[in-house]
Image (tube, rainbow, N blue to C red; front, side, top):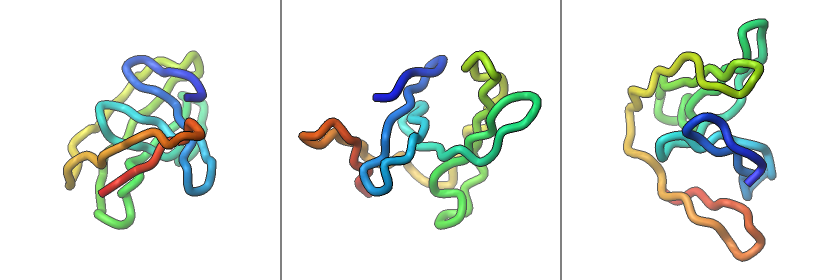
Amino acid sequence: AVGDAQGGMFINSRRKGNTVLLYKKYIYSKHRAGKKGERWTCSSKWSKKCPAQVLLAQDGSITDVQIVHTHPPPTVNMDVTGKFIKRF
């Protein structure tokens, strides 16, 4: 794990090694950073047209959440190297 956010955890993805946010059983990818903080969108935004997103303030606190997903959460496991694996 890279670190943690309020109620969530930053982890490294196995496939590309990118940092993603695991929050309430769902995985979010960093979409963009702005004046109010960072917007993270559901990792299934494109494949499943999922509108869920989380806004993290600069101090790491979660300030805005839309967690209505169009799909059930993925199963997330850790491999022997400590990287997380998403299974569907």
